[in-house]
Amino acid sequence: MKREDKQQIIEQLSADIQEYENFYLTDIATLNAVKTSKLRSECFKEDIKLVVVKNTLLQKAFESLEGKYEELYPILKGNTAIMFSNSANAPAKLIDKFKADKVPSLKGAYVQESFFIGAETLKDLVNIKSKTELIGDVISILQSPAKNVISALQSGGTIIHGVLKTLSEREQ
Image 1 (tube, rainbow, N blue to C red):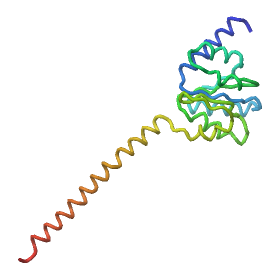
Image 2 (image 1 turned 45 degrees about the vertical axis):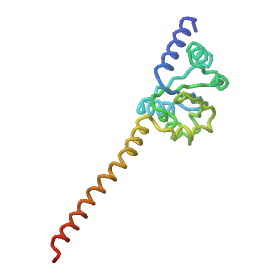
Image 3 (image 1 turned 90 degrees about the vertical axis):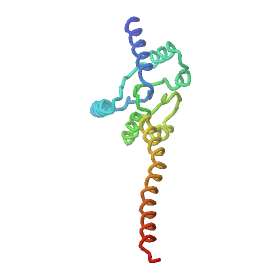
């Protein structure tokens, strides 16, 4: 491969790393053509960009960026595919879905400005909530007291009305 081609790949990887908030490093080497095609179509459905990379070029892309990605260098061995996503847990769920095949296997991930190294972190990554899920949780928590107050006022109004009506109809 020519130096210009390598430089172009490094620049593209750097741009992708900056564009996407999260990425997962996986090993998909043992997948056959049918399973690879199925994985790629699932990635497309989930808005995940899947790219097979050379480890040295990926490391150079990391080095060209301002962030500190040294924690990922030891896992850049063997075959590496990188899954880019703006959703924190979508790639983890996809990897978990394919775990019966044991491929793709998780090497590591950079999610929400944190590093996750090793396949044993997959369960934690699956359980991470996305930004929209967290916003929905906060909204439901905030709505709960307001709903309680409104229902108490509504039920209290009928009780007070009933008491007043009973008192007014009572013989004196």
